[in-house]
Amino acid sequence: MYKTLVGGLLAAAAFTLSHSTALAQPEIVSGPAAEADCFVPWTADTKFFKFPKKDGPYRIALANGYIANTWRIQMIQTAKAYAAQPDVAAKLKEFKVVSTGEDVPAQISAINNFIDSGYDAIVVNAQNPTAFGPVIKRAKQAGVVLVAFDNILDTQDAINVNVDQKGLGVLWANWLAKHLPDGGKVLEVRGVAGTSVDTDRHNGIHETLDATGKKWDVVEVLGKWDDPTAQKATADAIAVHKKFDGITAQGGDTGVVQAMIDAKHPFVPFGGETENGFRKFCAKYAGEGLKCSSAGTGPAQVAVAIKTAIAALEGQVVPQSIKLPLAIVEDPNFKAGQDFYPDQSDNFFVGNAFPTCGINFTAQEIMGQSKENQ
Image (cartoon, rainbow, N blue to C red; front, side, top):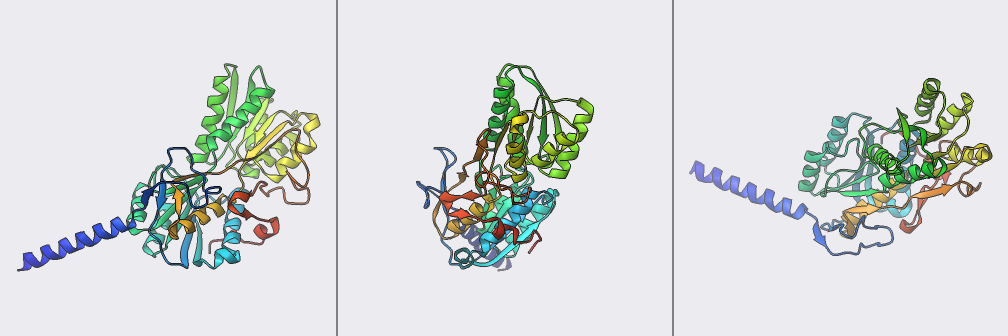
């Protein structure tokens, strides 16, 4: 009798777990996406997901990692600004933000806590693309929609939202190759070690430079996408190597140029990100040799990720991997009031809009938000 009872309970539990797990899985369906102009599939082979529809309002969390640079701070502020917009706020019961630093286990723990607390969706900027396997499985089994953006996850079981980060490295390298047809010595200011963005951009730069067949001497330093860190790393590199023929930086670019000015280093061709201060410098010193390609994507990626999570919870069709457009401007086309804003902070990232997704923010909307956890 005892064995029969236990066996029956175990079978029932197994059935319940299997049944709930099956319900949690998104259905693989045909495209296009519900908002095809916004939710653009990464490739022609990208799968389309249709999650079981949930009634709102929803509890959504943002699990961020690294916070100590202006892009990440602006990203947190943008997320809060988006969640506060009336049409978005009406769909949210709760919006939670946590930043855990560079500690990967701490970020994984935060995601696990959100799953255990019954959140409907979790948006994540991942510190490592491959370390999240178990928590991805837990989210899937619990029916939690998991959306990664910027630093994405190496999985087919979560939704990824990103720009072509490797393509960005290719773009910068092509800019340098165009302006340095005989090759040369290049300073590469990298981002946060171990992240998918840093790796992809780095690989794009090196593969493209190598393919030119020219001789390149690339000196790598870590700038962590942060102006003060990148400025010091650049200053140290100039002190050791004396002269570079070109520079590429993933972020902290305003600090990189300031280090060049402080060291009286000649201006050289530069492939960099979209900071307002960097673009101010590019416009101001173009005639003195600072020939810039400024490209990237503003922190409003996070708003697209939240929008995607809500669409998935509403049962809309979304691609498993969503490709966002780059914001690009190159010398000699830097225009005040359009490509950079003289009266705005140097730390503000320009190109912080995705019109095809109905996402656009004023600097005031973003800067009015805090960077703290909530």
